[in-house]
Image 1 (cartoon, rainbow, N blue to C red):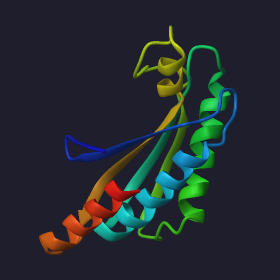
Image 2 (cartoon, rainbow, N blue to C red):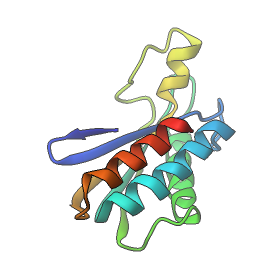
Image 3 (tube, rainbow, N blue to C red):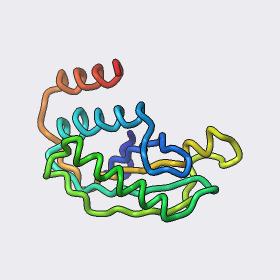
Image 4 (tube, helix red, strand yellow):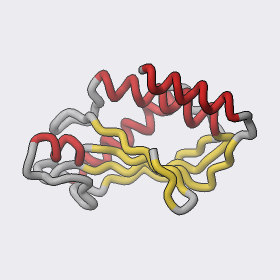
Length: 138
């Protein structure tokens, strides 16, 4: 997770080659992100889901991944104040890694969730540290 120019960006990797579903590890990680980050740390946000893929797949698949992840966020309990405002597929644009290796292609098969207009909750630092420790233990 990174905070860039007042936005929060999280990349979810782990999509099967030529598939729109996440592997089990990433699916569990995604559920933790919804419950322990978006729902607990923030009051509201406008969320964009932008799908990407490696250079062996088609652009339509990147959109299907973004749509599927947005659905999974809602199914995992994403609260209504987190508005899904955009779902896009950009194909192999903006590679985050090389497409010359298996690992690089794996990293490029991702959906980036960008939070804009994020309103943080007021809470004490001990809550943040507790959440951080929970995520590290998973």
